[in-house]
Each structure stands twice: as C-alpha cells, then as structure tokens.
Image (cartoon, rainbow, N blue to C red):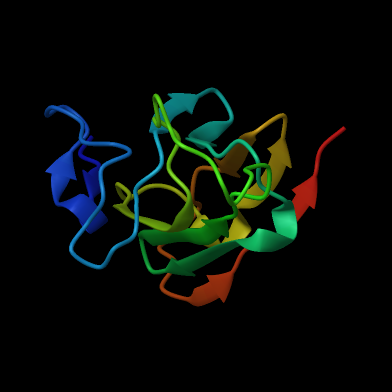
Length: 137
C-alpha cells in the first residue's frame, strides 16, 4: 500500500521533512496515515488553528489539506531565543492508495489535531469535493 506525499514529493516510508518550507513558501504539517478496521485515517498536527481556517479538497485519490496558522500571541517587539513553531500558510497533498472512498470522508478538528476518516470503498470514486470540518469537543 503506497502513500505519496505529493507536496514535498516524499514517500512516508522515506525520511520525513515535515515542518520544512517548500518552494511556494508554505510549510508542511506533521502527518500520520494509518489503516484501522473502519478504513483509512489521516491525522494532521495543527495546533493553534480553528476549523474554519482549514480546507480539505478531495480530487480522485488525492487529498489536499491547506490553511493558514496565525501567530497571534507574539508581541511585535520581541527577540527570539528559540523559534521552532512554524506559522503562515501551509499545504500538504497526499496521493492515497486505491480502495478507500474519499467522497465519504469525514473530518474533525480537536485538541490541535485534524483527523480525517475515510471508509473502504465499495466501488471506484472519481469525484472532486470539499470535505467539511467540524469542531470536536
């Protein structure tokens, strides 16, 4: 089962460059993808976000997750000693393996993680759609 991270052109089995900037100036959030008895799970680490700042687009077997993480807690007059948190626009594009129905994907954002659950497919899906995101409790 191959999963390709298109936005940084790496395979998940290869060394990860998550969090690194890309040529477009966007950063790539840390992402886990795994299967469970209910299907495929995509889990993205996105602390400090609101669900309405996130967008998920499905196109055939490709999943595009994007948004913008604001830096709203910092004083304008500060000098960093350590800066490890990435802010600004981000995007990750994932080519997912066949056998999952992305048109039936459900997404929830809770405690700084975006979780997208994708059930197994009953037949091949070739539609494009936007996946709504709900706030978790």
